[in-house]
Image (cartoon, rainbow, N blue to C red; front, top):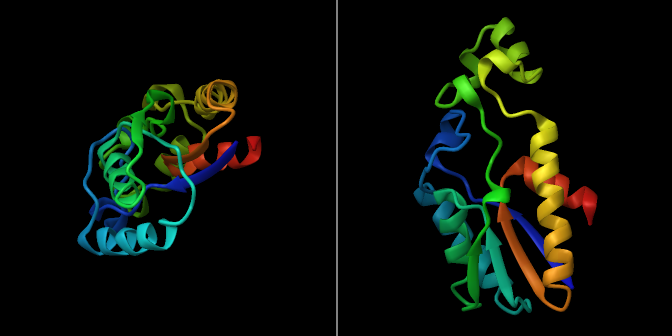
Length: 154
C-alpha cells in the first residue's frame, strides 16, 4: 500500500483568513488553476482510489486530482475538518488575545472540537484503510490537522 496525503486546495476564505471548520466553501479560481497543474504533474502516479473529506473544498480538490486518474472517489466523514465552534466564520487575526487563547485551548464553552477527538477519528480512519485497502495505492484529500496526524501515523 502506498498512501499519498494531500491537504485540500485553497478557498477564498483561506485567502481572507476566515476560519472554515465544517463549512462548505468552494476553491478559489487561482487555487483551481494550481490544482489542475498539480493533477497534470501527478497523472503518472499510480492511484487506485481517492478518499476525501466530505467538505466541498476537499471534494473539489479530489475531483480535480482525479481528472487524469479516473478512479473511484469515496467520501469519509472521519476526514472532516476540526469543528471550530463559535469561531467558525471569524477572522483569526481580528480575535482578542483572550479569544485566541480560548480557541487554542479548545475550551468547551466555545463548542470547539477537542484535538483528541480529531486524532481519534483520524486514527480510526487510518487503521481501517490500512486493513481494508492494504493492496491499493491511495490518495487521501483532507484538512491540515488530519493530514498532519496521518503523516505521523504513516
